[in-house]
Amino acid sequence: MLTLKLITEETEKVVKGLEKKHFKGAKEAIDEVIATDKVRRQAQAELDANLSAAKKLAGEIGMLMKQGKKEEAEDVKARVAELKEQNKQLEEKKAQAEQELTRQLCQIPNIPYDEVPEGTCAEDNWVVKSNLKECVVGQDTVGNWDANPVVETAKLPHWELAKKYNLIDFDLGVKITGAGFPVYRGQGARLQRALINFFLAEANKSGYEEIMPPTVVNAASGYGTGQLPDKEGQMYHCDLDDLYLIPTAEVPVTNIYRDVILDEKDLPIKNCAYTQCFRREAGSYGKDVRGLNRLHEFSKIEIVRIDTPEHSAESHKEMLAHVEGLLQKLELPYRILRLCGGDASFTSAICYDFEVYSEAQKRWLEVSSVSNFDTYQANRLKCRYRNSETKKTELCHTLNGSALALPRIVAAILENNQTEEGIRIPAALQPYMGTDMIR
Image (tube, rainbow, N blue to C red; front, side, top):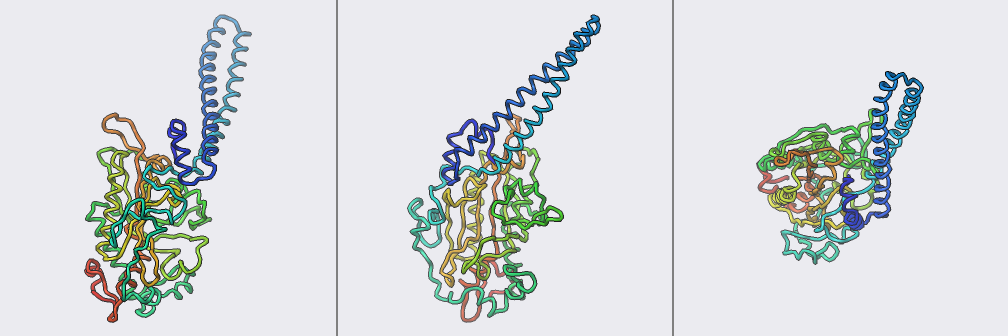
């Protein structure tokens, strides 16, 4: 969440940033935070004054008793008791203000960086790079992008290829669980495993420490990375134990550093993790959810960084280069989008999406989002580092990205590599797959 320091000292900047994200009632929300914080600070100031006065009066009681001034001593005792009663009310007032302040702050999104484009929806996102053509940043938006590659052999969509080669059984998944839970089998299961091992190996080469975290988390973890409060109802909740199935490995991995003070010399911390991910995808319907396009359970490799504010922009560039390298090695047509304010996530300060093209479906498929959250998550997590020069503790910056999510990568590989002999496996993936062709 945004820090009170930022809100109170740079109020105009915060309001403009929230308006860029098209957050309704931005000024009113910030005014409410400032007003509630004023109530909290006034209660604290009165409480401090009362405690100081009570301490001074308590010292006078003994002196008056020694002087035989019992009546005056009793009056002072009564005044101390009165102050103590006032303090109980002030403590309650302060606690209520703090609770309300936290509630208000949780409803306010992160503010975007200056380089985040203006815009209201996905059509306004900038296409900043592609392996299809040169891009003019700021002019090429999704809305006017016309570079769609033509793969002559890409005639069948992946769900038909999956059936043809017995790779994925969607009907069996419905029988076992429900829609959105496919069963991979045979070479389909092997392709999943090959991609997981390939992505983890590439992350290891780039210096990421592999983590195997739990796939269920407590509410504090969901709150720490901004998934809770769950405004869109996307998380699976285990009511009996009050635990949540993770929507991404970002949640458990980033929470490793909750309530931790790190040494600056240890930053940036680089972690990666393969997990199953679970999303309810409430409200999703139509052709865009067919096959592997939108699942309730899927495999994903996540990369996470914890860094200093001064170096986090460089970390973000390195993460973008890592994800782009994966798509290049998989020989897929891709483009990179810088998301506009209206399409950016609640918690990100800046986000880039990677999309691969599906010729069979005639559409672009998002396969990764790589975000810098600035101090927004760290403030919730109380994730700090000790500055090596000042020795003071400061909030870290947190970053994460998909490297990569498997379902749409599988869809793109199947569709863009179909031949009369079978489905060609990209050269970089062949050592992990143990074959150059699915037949």
